[in-house]
Length: 367
Ligand SMILES: *Cc1c(COP(=O)(O)O)cnc(C)c1O
Image (cartoon, rainbow, N blue to C red; front, side):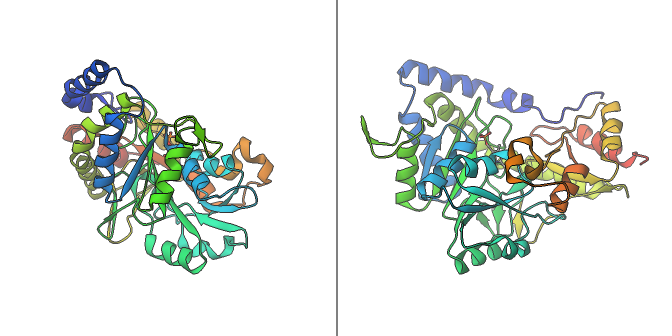
């Protein structure tokens, strides 16, 4: 066994390839490509899966978040709280609507936004919190929701890495005012290209997101907003409808891998991820931390084990955000994660031998 990729689509494609090709043919035979029955069917199925009243397909996860912010009239002069440790899209969505992302430090144990840091980031301009269920692990929603209620803030969940994850038995995406999902191919539920959606229980938000993503149009050639073009196309919707019924089973396979990793990895140099109480993560990413992270990366690479870093540069130090005026040391927890985090192989269809090989690779790391 000399090559274990960081991620692989091959086992999924072997199982679902024929059904996916069937979906292509169905769309092709119908000669209808945008805003048709596939989109509607997937939206209904995904809303039912999440347990929300509405789902609106979009072009990608970034747009989902951006359109929700727009739908809530968040823009110029407003501040939105986002974790200092996330993928850039969360912060960019805020920037795109003209608002200012204000970073909140995560909890080093769970990598997610630390509710105890919310108070210090609040100003009279704060309008919303965007908790990110990073790596597929749900945020601690109870304290986040009560903070939001106390200060009349919107909550927009970034669920791009957490399709199907639960907090106290309830799916993520159902706690806040609305939630954005990404169906980027590598996500737990992935299309064969860019795709995304917004879910919500509020009809007005759903209607606004749909209009905003369709050139701001409520009916044909009538434009009530200066909108965007960001829609879920029929081909991607058809693919997602094939994959959705398998999502829970595929997430369960990830949970098994994670459980085996957690039980069998023992190396004082390697800090394993912790999970908060009463949640069921979906392990989009299995993130460990190591002071000698780059040495660990090289050690595993030598053994043919693929890894990745999520994310090597924290938001506030990204070149595109120099205008925010931050310096190294401003968000020490996010910086620590960036400097020490390593993501281990995690994908549907990893064999027991492959999982064991990764465990052996970690356990034999000399430091
Ligand atoms: C992938 C991702 C997004 C953006 O999704 P796209 O579909 O790539 O635009 C947003 N937030 C997080 C946390 C992500 O991982």
